[in-house]
Length: 144
Image 1: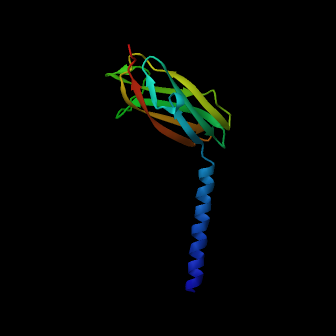
Image 2: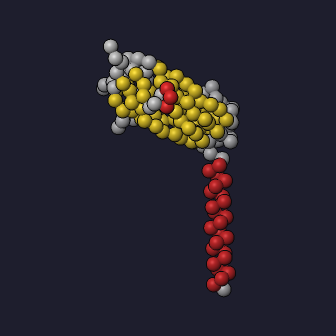
Image 3: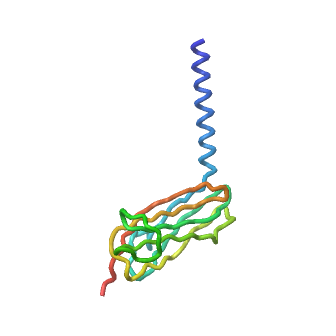
């Protein structure tokens, strides 16, 4: 009887692990997020920030969202507030695709303060599932 209970428990655990793997494989994914030219993680204020990533969405993409904020801040804006630069942008030009290369250039204002920033890239599929990738960005002042 003890052996039957043991095998039954193993079967239940194996079934749950297969179910969770299948669900994870259906979620959108962002692979190899590159921030800055040559993936340097840096940008000079007043220039363009290069962003690139591979996106896979088994249920088709609805939109891609980009957020950049100063370390410790989560404000939503496209301008300078309280000496910090914040950006939130939605890309809907990938709608309906399953796999795509995200390659965008974002203008960083000359007034963006130098410092450490967080980059959040999210892909939301047409069923509302979300995949995320994050990285660090250092904004540098231009040399004169």
